[in-house]
Length: 186
Image 1 (cartoon, rainbow, N blue to C red):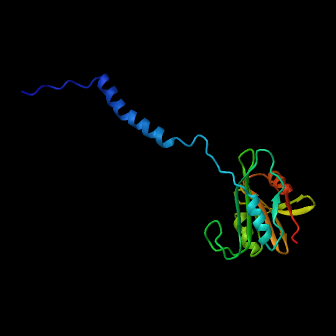
Image 2 (cartoon, rainbow, N blue to C red):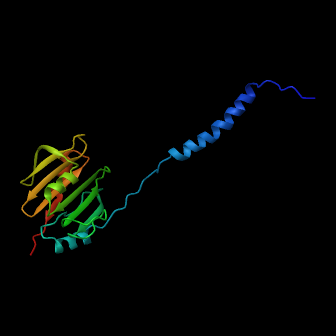
């Protein structure tokens, strides 16, 4: 003879809800947890800068020192025809030095000697003219993206184009430019 089932009570509904919600809470907690302190490696840029200065057909810009709390996180020197950091064959002699400020903001210096318009368009993310900045007596052209996010300062010279860019305001870009100097090639 079959037994009659008793109707589900509040206790049974609560237990069923727990069976569903506990694993769901564990899954959500596991997949939404981000790294507590993402570490970005600091690089020693000076040996690469020395190599670039020896091989570049232009004066390579570098900071004498970085301000307290600033650190280099990306450096590369690529000669024409060699693989660049993305693995593509480089169409120019290109020097890059990226730094994180003490506030964790990224700024990058790019210099190259060939196809300057293509380089400016790529590095500035198709930035549009936005006036000029004068730093240490040199006038740099300002560029800003349509979304007003990325700003760039561009200095064009006969044999090299220099670009300092980042998702920062122009004053911070000007600060970085003010740190840069070149050693005269002999």
